Length: 246
Image 1 (cartoon, rainbow, N blue to C red):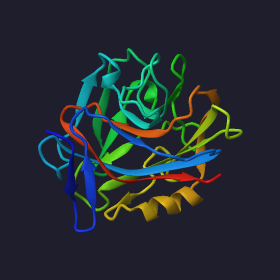
Image 2: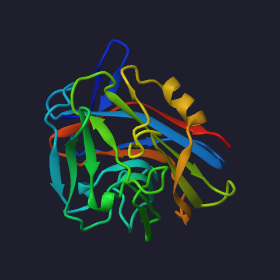
Image 3: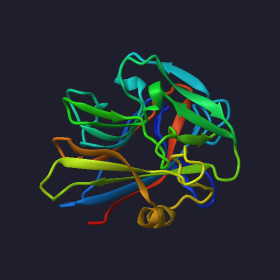
Image 4: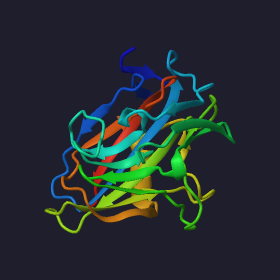
């Protein structure tokens, strides 16, 4: 299959990525020092554009193509690696861990699992700074959740924020949005009407949790990057926002 645009509801169209296929979305935000990014995502079957059931799967690590990559990077098409590109976003490093799992969870959801619950990383082309994201209580591991059934609120919103000291600086501090209750949830809210307006409203008001501070990424990212490593499910992108706050 190829990437497709599917009508999910009367109000919602989504871009559905083919299995294990990357999407690069360049953006232009000159001289930013506070950049905020959000998107609505969901999952569906390999051969059905609107069926999130039965997608639980383990992917054994062989290469960087066996990792989730959802965030920002340079505009090249390469999967992020230590030697060829930079990246800041949701992922499931470190390398060499046995597998990444999409596991069933409570509340008609899947939970994305990986070694030591690491779900965020910043890579500068030679060095990798990785953190197990902790929720706002400072102790609970946080996870990405996706719907595992056709229920109310099928799309999940994810947000993050990137700052730097001045417009010429490549030292980035990255922050991640977390749901206030329960603390483990990185999905900010669920929606049947995913929209840019909903994302922009949250980007303005949501407290962001600190992830990696003061890491020199070497090159300021200029594109969004979406890559889903599973064989039995596809990633759906409903809408996204890249907003310069300062």
